[in-house]
Length: 189
Image (cartoon, rainbow, N blue to C red; front, side):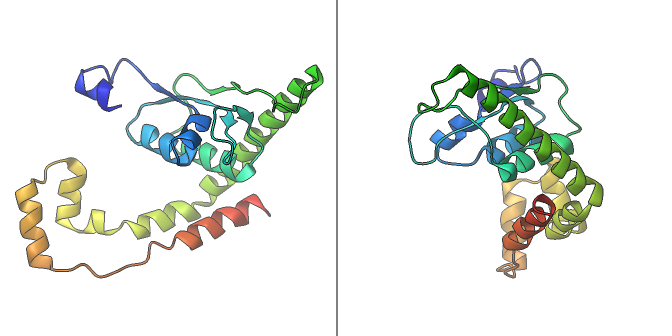
């Protein structure tokens, strides 16, 4: 994204995020997809995943409903895809050698993303996680400096002075476990 922004190409391209490659980079697909979406650059997602312990590009079919729900929450949250979609760039695992295995893998992968979409829609409709996020980041909307930062209008000098005036911030829980438990409640009900 930085390359596209740096050279004035951000309006000409959207990104395809491959979850298996995020695994190889040492983080979750949800992160890369969320960042691409936040910058308005999410074009499509390869509907695959990697093997967390293998260490190479395996392009497995994603069967993890928690992962597909998290990915589909981002896609639903941005109003769907403008172009692109879910690409089934996946292969059967090396021990699955029969042609029918590829058939079963595609069906199970599509079913996993379809269920993830249904769960993501339920979460979105409930508004519960949206309210939780708004509460978590309310200081960005009730504090003038938060709004300036959001709009890109705050200078580093202003931030230094602001930090000096405010002193050490009060430690506030991010409530990560509550967010995960809330998502799980929708997934496993």
